[in-house]
Image 1: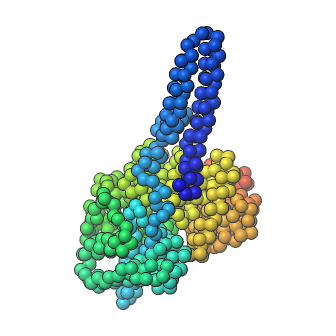
Image 2 (image 1 turned 90 degrees about the vertical axis):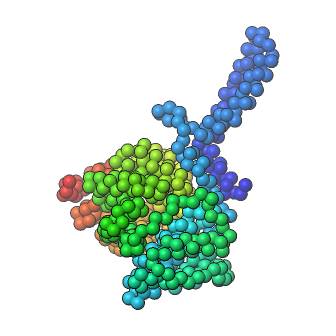
Image 3 (image 1 turned 120 degrees about the horizontal axis):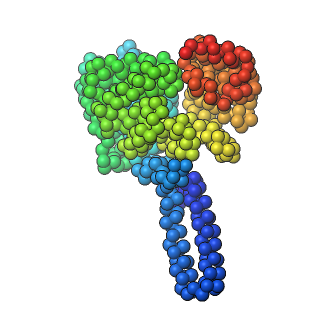
Amino acid sequence: MNKLLAKDLWSQLEKRKVVRVALVYLLVGLLFILIGTVAIEKLGIPSFVLSLLLVAILLGFPVALLLAWVYEITPAGIRKDSADDIESVTKMEEYTSSCDAIAVLPFEDLSENGDQAYFCEGLAGEILDALRKVPNLQVASRDAAFRLSARETDFKEVGRKLKVQAELKGACRKTGDRLEFNAQLINTTDGALLWSREYDRPLKDIFDIQEEVENSVLKALKVAKPREPHAPTQHVNPKAYDLFLHGLSSFARHTTQDNVHARQLFIKTIDIEPEFGRAWAALAYTYGYSYMYFNATDVNLAEAKRTSKQALNLAPDLAESHVSSGIAYCMDQNYNKAQDEFEKSIEIDPKNFPAWYFYGRAKVQEGDLKRALRLFERASRVRPEDFQSVLLQAQLYIGLGQKNMALEVTREGIERVRAALALNPDDNRALNMGAFALLRMGQEKEAAQWMSTSLKNAAMDSIIQYNGACFFSLSGEVERALDCLEHCLIKVGNINCEWLEHDSDMDNIRRHPRFKEIIKSFPD
């Protein structure tokens, strides 16, 4: 067993209280033996009874450890740990050690007008997502890989920055009802060409082309496909699929404006293909994200519930349908239903990062911080370059009074943030969350620089501005905190005031007269 697995095993034994149960069991067992010895001597009980007692204690020891691993003690009694069910579905260690790793770079746009970047990016994203689901293949996330340009980045840099052994790159354009596409699989160590092919096919064959590329890549890498296939690809109208890919491209940028644009594109997709389950799930995501991050209105909640329900009806075997439903239930504070949906999505697709991540967020809102920690840990292993799932662990450890663990994961989170900024120095989310991490580590100067840069670059992003208010409140800069809050609530106007009233980061400014005036000025 390597050090990584040993460390993870010991961590799980501690978190599931197996170590504690073992110690308690041994102490209680020893106490029973001592009492039994005294009782035998004074009451004249046959000596074989002591032997039976010793055998019973020894046989019960592994049973106690097994129960400690599978079950947890809660205020409501003993219950099965739902995270154990998820872990039994897949061994995440298989995805993080001794496996091939590949990056799928955004395909180059060869169209005459240069206006098909969204389509080329979408095609690469679809192939990436298909490869991502292969159990024994590690695939760099879309967020990380798409920050690199295939034209401007050489294979060695791709391998070094994304920690992969191969890259898939290509170029495409669609003209009328034809698709021209070429793809190359390159070894990032020596630049050797592992596989390549050119396609000139009808646009309606795009789903077959994607599958051919996926199979060819796996064959070249000598990686076996899963025995049980995932949900079959739904062939849809090419025009609808074009709109769908455009929507995915917009949604991936995660800004307020891009979220709204993506929603409009998904609605147009559904107008053409009303039975396209993936489009319904994607549409549900836009409403769920709006409610969580931008505007917690009854309309967004109702639409998230309606569209995710339709996604489940049309595509029940799609992990994204269940994730979108889980998000909707979580926003509606129906945490039992949310848990069911997230666990189903992970059962379908164990490497689905949003499933693990939003399941963790749901547990935070429910108040189950220990379970949330476990889920964020899984999310961080599914996507090894993600910094959010790591930095959120730090906040939870602080809430649980484990400051040493908070510092440990904060260090890891900062490393991941720096890696993200090496790919994209203008990543405002990385700068914003990284600033909190640096502040926690006592690096105030760099923390302030990162926060100021993110605020300047994303003046109309409600999350960035709100985080700025929290940051300056924590660092004792009251007026700057109030400036950010005022800008966020009055000029951007998308923060949930109910959340604001309970956010401990605002405690340093909550009693300030200006704080109260800002809250009063915010419309209900």
